[in-house]
Image (tube, rainbow over the protein chains, first blue to last red):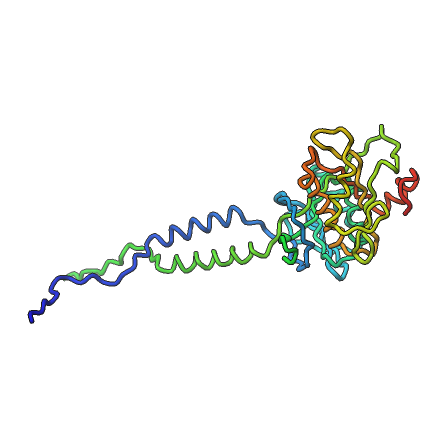
Length: 145
Length: 158
């Protein structure tokens, strides 16, 4: 039986990766544009809702955790703790004085007693805040998230 | 005799570029996945000096009790039945249907915030469920407002 031997040049098993950097850069540009800097890194169990609206960029944050610690941020800098709700009102009044339409976000743990959130909302109302967002996470149809 | 100088190659080494950019992508993906930037919006009503009187019987009174249960117009009610109950509050003869009565959401001070948000979310969905022409007029009075203003008008007792 006659056997043919492959004599020609055999191609190297090479995967071209030259375009990988381009693809990855495109992905990075996408992430940089859509990235929101998290000014408040407090870990809380957010309440779950079906209706959720996008929070405007650089909104001011007022967060409260299960221990009742309140933190505030005007939207650009990292959130700092404040000793009392009265401080929230003066902080909010200061932000509203600079920009009357500045949106505020209330980030509270779902287990927090409502009276704590009530006092924060009241402080924001007294500071003449126009729009308040109550931060939530997506509720699934089954309701178990 | 001159020795030939070895010329360095004019190439920028880009072999590790993909590694660096992949690390950046992993960072962005991880930090994005854990940040929540959505929530229920709540427009604070502007003060209207022309409207000084509120009739108690005009409003639907929605309470959230300390144990997280719900009471609508003094009747205990699971959230699933709220939309059906509010169907009876549609303005007679309105087409498309409209509920002009304000909904007063009043959670107990000891109620969990999560329960209040469930109630608020359910009320916001009523527009879609009943095909209403406009959003419900949901009011969320604070304790101070209840004591100072609403109480004086005889609408709610603190």
